[in-house]
Length: 251
Image (cartoon, rainbow, N blue to C red):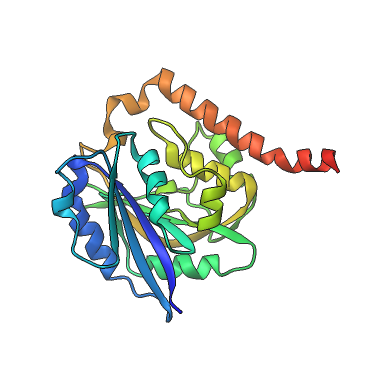
């Protein structure tokens, strides 16, 4: 029986041209014996702009739906996920060699429910830039990412675009948060509130920087909306952290 790791990608028209690079990085992955990948691509919308860029591969499942931004698209894509692990891959990003194998190895460790890895920003001129505050490789304890995020102006020490998670946990948390942005940060904080994770120090993702990406738009950093997004992400994560004490009070 083949084990499956499902890679899930939300995409809209302007980013569709980058799917070819994402696919190249996927087919170059070397997986452990007995493993294969599935690529779930979900268009955020119902246009004719994306389908022509979807590669012809039996392991790819393409779907469309009403426009609701990336979080809703990924969550809708979960209806077609068949793998026991779910790996995020934004349409304009690329996996590095061995990334999926390292995810599988990390999630095979006892007590680890999700994993992240080092990221390199890929600049338009081809240069890459790393983050100088990566944590050491190893386990991430419950609540650790949330505490760092709150203490550093809502900047986490691990990147949600590299998340690989046990499928049942993504579903239990309701998928990605219903936010106009930072929906992946919301999932990361919720995951850290309820379970232990793992950080892999080897680079797992090239994070493309380009003018059309959503995080490049002025609305993404507008103070009123950002404050509201961070507030609801924090409140949800804190509520999840408190669930253990609720259970104890009921005992």
